[in-house]
Image 1 (cartoon, rainbow, N blue to C red):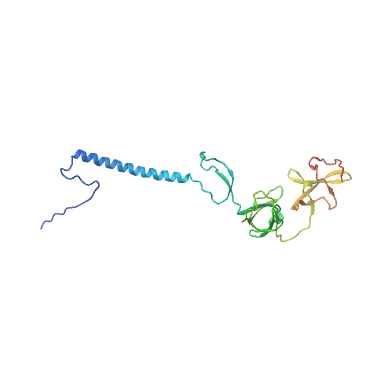
Image 2 (cartoon, rainbow, N blue to C red):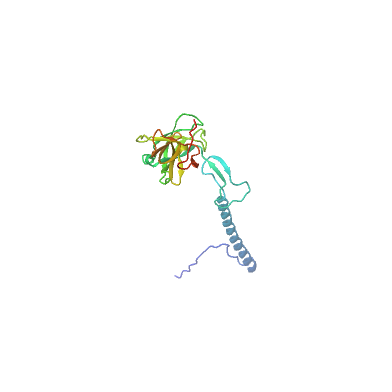
Length: 244
């Protein structure tokens, strides 16, 4: 027995029925349909591109905070990566303290510290060390220590003065002189000691800071008189007069 197989397939647009429309009109309609379909796909791609570009132009704040400074105005063009506003997050405060190297090596991340912000209260606020920065100041031999503390009522503001108390492993005795007595001469530190009415420079090494004073070590004694005003203009051997 001889069997004939006939395949079937579908296409779009469907094939033209015999004698239903002129072949030229059919071909014209077919080409128009294909052209419009191509334009539709192009328009959809352009819409997606525009949606992406619009999303890229949205600037969202990384956190909820206070606007400290505006860098642009409404309707103004900014370059990619340009600053729009400066935001401040006062929920958590960061304090940076320069700690002498001999004390910095005894501190550790997570250690508790006491903070007093005198403009708000004399009461102690608990904080903790969040980071010990490895890059210090070669001239002063100090290292930055960052401290974090919670500020739920937003009472502490940026730029306020804070006094920080660390829990050190050991205590040392040191000679204290007024902070204004220390003169910077390049990478050296010195104080002018008054002996027999003559100003004599004495090189010192700064050990630390305490309540407006500086702990120093050098050729200076506890009962020596030091110059605290006008010492930047003094010369070795220059006579001085002590005013009481």
